[in-house]
Length: 233
Image (cartoon, rainbow, N blue to C red; front, top):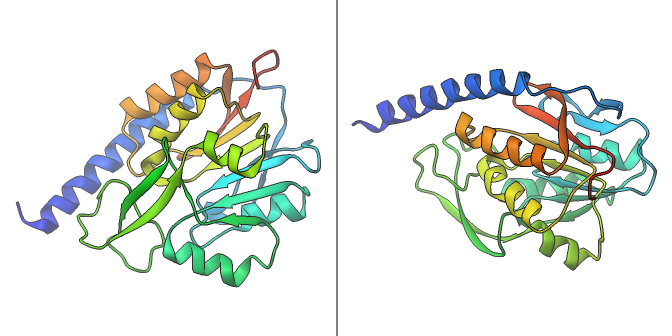
């Protein structure tokens, strides 16, 4: 099969699964006692509990070329923000734009510690690199990846109050490993993408619900889960 046809077929498959996953997620929405608001700009905007306390610990996985959400958490909400992205463009972006607003770590978030090979996007202008070679590109980069539990131990955190995961398809590995380690962020925001077949989305969401989370907000591929009171944190 010609490479162009393979790319188009792969894109069609991903779009179809994205539509199915969005429809399924819409049916999982539940009433939630926590009031959420959006911070950040455009595609980088995400949710945060309106009454979150200053000094709360926030982990933001995935920066790309827009850290407006991360910066807003630090500046508007005065949170202790830690941002993670091992990709070359994101590292360069944060070197230019961060100016000490958040603690930036050039690590990838994964289900285990080690070196991971990421694959380049088809369009070199895009900052996102992928654990799965979705675009059939030849360029790769090897990056350090850590589990959430290892990151917490390395940074000396006993809890996470807010976590955002915009880490392409790696959410499918990271979230189950986080739950297995007993880590329960009070609020968890996830972008289900790259790829997001329904079977994966369903498996992860059901695991989150079994751990005490409720889907409190959704917009496109983005979802916010809140840990209900009485559940382990």
